[in-house]
Length: 429
Ligand code: PLP
Image (cartoon, rainbow, N blue to C red):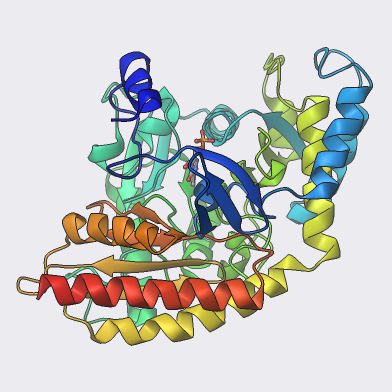
């Protein structure tokens, strides 16, 4: 065990996951490549769980942060005016498409979702919430309550009365025989039934347009829109958790919910917005935001350094039309990876823009195989490629490269993945 690893184990919680039998210390990065403490270079197809949307060592972000730090004011508090914060809020409010939107900045996705749940439950005077099975929204009491998989819950003491809906896994045995349209209809019928029979006074639905931690499980386009029609009839609010899907990553829409043809009442964001610098937030209808009494401050939320980084990141995303790059590179990679579907150890290959996944299964029983996914993670690393792992059963390889991904890096990553999964499949036979 390395010296740093044994010190990590001694003072950090045992439940904090570390990738790899021999965990990596990443000490440098440029573009889509990172370097570890031993000087080995990797092509990074996971980018710190989709946080480095522009990749590493981006001059524009570094210069914006350095300029702010050079003023001598890293932060005072949000009790004073902060120019970057106001300008970033203006931009996000406009991009959101939410009428009369207002923005509240936090330090993480968890806090962003917690705030959105507070807004919605307060506005509707109800603690009843709908969430999707398989969803992940954070690690606080409220967000754990709406997390739709017991393996990721660290508490069962829920402050909310949560009802879980189907809404992603079209491939589940109960739905596999259905067309997408039939699946959407079945999900909507299920929602109506829940509202009629078990949850008469629901405040909101919180949903990820593509479920990140759940291995990029994707509801058919339009499902959340079909849900919203029913929700609107009941005055129920929709919160779209865009922590992984925001800023054009899905390629076909700037926010993931756009793929469903609707605008929600609130969206939450974090991860990629600061390209590695800490920032999260909620953008919501102004009346909902203003109605919440005495929320006060999030001491570091919207601080000048994070908002400077976020302004530079967002400017880069828009100026370089990275949404189009996500669509183009994602489609090319997915087209190549679809060949893996024929392998006995592969259960599914799917993707939307620069979020794509390969689901591993036992070649004999067809059961989800976290062991094969673990082998593939290690095997990819040996070939110089970093990928992620996820899914309720832990059997999904998930990839979220930088949205600046070049043609050459996209082709190299795709080929390394093909090679890795084929080798793992051959070994499993
Ligand atoms: N929502 C989604 C969709 C996420 O993927 C995550 C984190 O992985 C969160 C919320 C929580 O964000 P954070 O870890 O910044 O608190």
